[in-house]
Length: 315
Image (cartoon, rainbow, N blue to C red; front, side):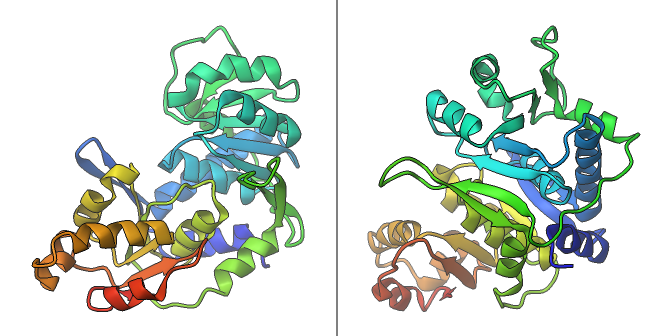
């Protein structure tokens, strides 16, 4: 079936012992396997069902994290609709989008806990906020705010929920609103499945990718996460745009997804030191293994493709 449950379960079964996500916890590199991630997804999905959330809209606001990815996949591999929102938007804009999308449940980064009570007060349709962390000791008197671990515990006793059909709505992505009010773009299971299936490139399971773009964008969700998992890749989380160069040298990716502005910025930094040998650039800037850069979202001047030919292959 052309849906995201099929896509994910094929990956979880095929690559069970392999690393799915690699990330930095301060200076320590940590990993989550496909099997461990699958267990998280099943528990969150079951927890949503246990709390009566079915065929509902569920939003996510937060930075890229294992918990964000697991929660998103739990939503879209069940029968609910995911609404990923930009965590950098002002509170009033987030509240507006939550109301316009008829969101019933919100997964929220602990870093944004200060917004939780304001959101609950101004979003009458919203029934519950689950914080994307393992424990939560503050505001325990508010039953509408809980920790992801609590939801997963509920999922322990739940019967697994059915998957959405290919033509069912699965994700609402809001536009940036540069020419007016943000619009919710409705994407079906098959829309996302076909985007993954129709991007053709070959890497071996265990290939290292690094995700640097905002995870609430369809471009990043499809190309980094859904496509990466379908190939059995290790998707590494870049914790900050400011640390992108440093993190490339840490994670040593083979594949990376960028927008043209990033490519142009890297080139400007490199061109400021023209005497640095190409081999040193490959190793110290790109980590030594980078061979594929996907770029989109805007026009990339062919000049940069020519300039990068000695260092990486740009698709």
